[in-house]
Every structure is written in structure tokens, then in C-alpha cells.
Length: 494
Ligand code: GLN
Image 1: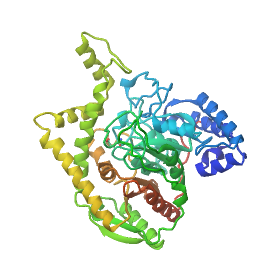
Image 2: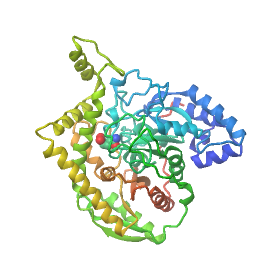
Image 3: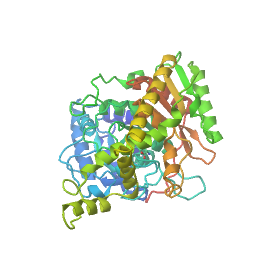
Image 4: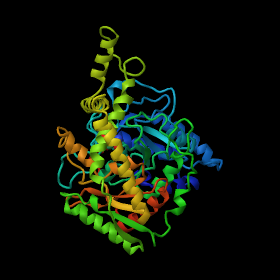
């Protein structure tokens, strides 16, 4: 099977499927072979080869009839947080042991309607809590990237690390992720791929296992900005089943991609220049500024004064919502059940056995900040801070059209390096969390390599529901950065 089929972009694959120079079946088969040869990465919890072949056969019929959807015949991977009908859906947790949903999430249903081919479900941090993919019950995902000349395993970022690794290692043409505090953008930055967190409300959350409902948002993970535009079109849309999904038209994102950024105002927030940021990340940011300036954009210094409170407020709001959302896992309705003693004891032993350490930490923090004595001091205060953060962005939009920042404060780190230090782990989200707190769309794209040869990402944040400008600026940066790094395939078994 030719490996070149797995290196296509979605846009190129679509063109070749369209003129019948390749079939959806051969495209699916080459990806299935790549996945089987790449188990060392541990990117998948479930591989669904038979399903992929069946989907591809259907796509080939529709392609032959000239009846193709937006993703017709495109092989994709799905983060295991999305419920998929008839296919094991684990959220990376032991507590969902054996859970096979009887329904399909809206986002994935939209993708299947548009002809996408499902290759499998990707590994992830347990309940999407983490920045390194080390909290999964199914074991860590490895980053396809290593430092040249150094065999140590690196994390792919989290929580959508399986999806990011699968896209970077050319095991799928695109994958879904979810982003509550950075889980699409941070793994994209760590693996040299593109990740887009849409505006809160752009994609339906229905059928996605809930972590922090006021922050969670699904989005595409791809190898190019253009592919993110194509995938988002298929994923997005109003859904009556999610009351926070917003009833606005889904634009044709692709059509604006190549539009010049001339005259656009790009904000550079002073507060994102955090002390201790490595010089190479600051230098990459400066390159991004220069590229956009050269392309005719106007660079404007802005201030988002409450930025430093975003991370602490996030780590109150997100665990609070998680502790409430995770109350449903009681051994009665889903997955794991450890039968012991009376009903209360059964709940306790099931939850003790079913949740991992990070999830338990979040439940404890969340329950604490919501408790009667501390609610005002923590939860209410964090909600007020959240409003101030959103107001900072509103002020900025008076002066600029998008913001440009780095995505992460560092490149991918080693497996095990931060697992004993939750605060060090949480600090990885410092540049991504504010966009979640304000519900804004934000894109990460690979823009260069670190001195150690690892990918680094730049982030573009935009106004609510203005993914078009975010993608357009992302495309301009992609063109200028001309990032073409690929990890050497050390993980392949053949
Ligand atoms: N790393 C962050 C957390 O652990 C964000 C996770 C996410 O976006 N799902 O909460």
C-alpha cells in the first residue's frame, strides 16, 4: 500500500476522490495499514477497520453518483470522548468500561452524513483532564516527534493527544478533538499539527462526554489550516439538542482562506509575554508578527489585564463543573460496577476503582469550591473573574480583529517529567485557557522548530463566531512559516 496516500491533505484527497484517481476504499486501506503498523504510539483505544471499509464502500458509491458530501471518503479518527453508536466509547476512563452508546454525538453524526470514514477512537486523558495524555486508563500516547538523536519518549500533549499523534503520524487525514482549556491547541502545538477550537456554541456538545460544560467545545485537528476549514464546515451547526448551541449560519470557511490579510489589525497582548518564556518561543512570536506585517496587516499592542487570573479561575470553574458532571457515574447506569455491600458502598467502591488520580483530584477540588462554606469565596469569585476576562477581550476587539500569541510556553516535554507535579502540568494551559473562559475561537498552527528540533505553535484568537478571520490569518501565517517538518517514523513496525 502506498504511503503517499496517508500523506495527502484532506483537500488533495477530496480532489483525487472527486476525479476518481483514487478510491475511498484504497484510501481507507492504506490508513488501516498505517494504524496497524503504528501501535507503538498507543494513539487508538479502538480501531474500527471493518467499519472504515463499510463507510468507504458507501462513499465510493456516492462519489460515483456525483453525490459527495463535504468529507466524502475522508478517513478520520474520533477522540474517545465522542459517543459513537455501537462503538466502545471510554473517555479514557475505566469507569466507562465496556460502554457502547446507543446513540451518536451530533458532531460525529454530522461528519458521517457528510461522508467521513471512521478509522477508530483515539486515546485521551481521562475525561479530558490533562495536558500530556498520561492520565488515560489506556496508558500514555507517545508523541511521534522525538528530539533528533535522543530516543526519549515525549508526550503528545493533552487531552486530545491520541488525535494529535494520529494526525501527525499520518494515521488519518484529520481527527476530532475537544478543547476545554487547550486540549485541541496544546497537543496540536506539541505534534506540529493544526488545531482549531471553535467559538463556544459553534459545534453541538450533544453526545460528547461532559467535562466542564460551560467550556467544552469540539473542533478539528488536521495537518493544514485549509483542512481545518473543511472539517469545521462538516462538524459545525445548530443543534436543538444542545441548548448552548447557537443558531447562526455556518459560513463556507474555505472560501475566505486565501483572502489577503491586508488591513487586518493584529493585536499583540502584552500580558502573554510571561516571565520565563523561552527565548525561542518569544522569537517565533516575533517572526509571526513580522510575517503578518509583511503581508500588509497592522500590528497593534493591546492589553488584557486580567490574563494572569485566567488559569487560577479556570482551575476552579472546570473542576466545579466536572464534579457535578461526573456524579452520574455511579455503577448503576454506565460502565464499571464493583458490587460490594449496600448501595452506598457499591457507589463508593465503583467510583474508587473507576476514576484515576487526576479525576479524583478534580472531583475533590470541585466539590470543595462548590460547598456551602466556600462557594462565595471560590466559585462565585471565579465566575466574576471570568466576566472580567471576557470584558478584556471585548475591549481588545474595539481595536483589533484577532490576537496573535504563542500556543504553549514550551515544546513537548518528556513522558513522566511532570506527572508528579499537577501545578507544573496546569501551567501548560496558561496561554490557551483565556479563550475558553471567554468562549472565543482560537487556532494553533505549527510555525517552526525549537532549538531541539521540536515543533512550536502560534495561536490566533478571534471574535466570537469569527472563525473565518481566524482561519484567514492562520492561513497567512502558514504560508509564511512554510512549516514542513515531519517526525522520523521510529514507531513503525514495518
Ligand atoms: N489541560 C487542561 C485540563 O486539564 C485542559 C483540558 C481540556 O482542554 N480538555 O483541564
